[in-house]
View (spheres, rainbow, N blue to C red):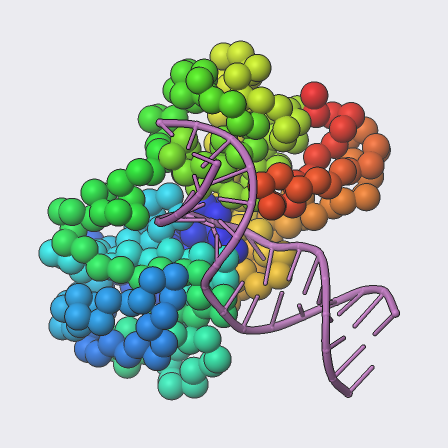
Length: 276
DNA sequence: CCGGCCACCTGCGGGC
DNA sequence: TGCCCGCAGGTGGCCG
């Protein structure tokens, strides 16, 4: 479900609703694993260490949420269908798999119908070298990402540009929706081989990725089906989509018909007229 | 090392 | 109504 803008929105929403500020936040009084089997099982032993600890901060790295408990950090990936919400009661729903009971009486609940998500715990000093984070490329909204970097990284590769920008080893946060959208904005066909793109093209694409992710964050993400913010509200970026989920509809720029094809088993949308 | 494919799950909508 | 199919914001692992 969520790409960088959605995860960032959920992160901001949780900070707001939980009232986490200046390393102060609610304390976990109890943990309830209702169903351990996510992508990997929730580590029962390690996770119990969080009881009595305070949520000091929450941040995002790539599409992961990092809950900072001081010495320990809980990491959460939402997979395709994960979400977090805060409730004042015990009215759990189907697919509520994990609950952090807070000292203010509220429950912080992880919900995930498809269970492709992930919950894990590491010592805070080791979390960036954990198996989930150690291979990740640069953050697209940081200065670490620039056109030259992707140009250099792509010189020896034989793959198409859509797969390349969705590979989290090259740049993090771009998923199936924003890959199609960024390539449309940059006038590049998703099937284009990365080796055939010159430095200027990479600089343009990098800038477009940055812009689109920033705009999507400002609009609180894209809700097509089931993505919601921590508050339960939808994201508003759907109205800004030029190609994704618009197969057969007219391009808003050239009025030609939007095409759909399957790349690496993922639906891919593009305009054959606007994208070369 | 790289590219391509699979598996992991549940739910929904459309066609018959 | 019910069944079957294809489809869904992701990614680690395996194979050639």
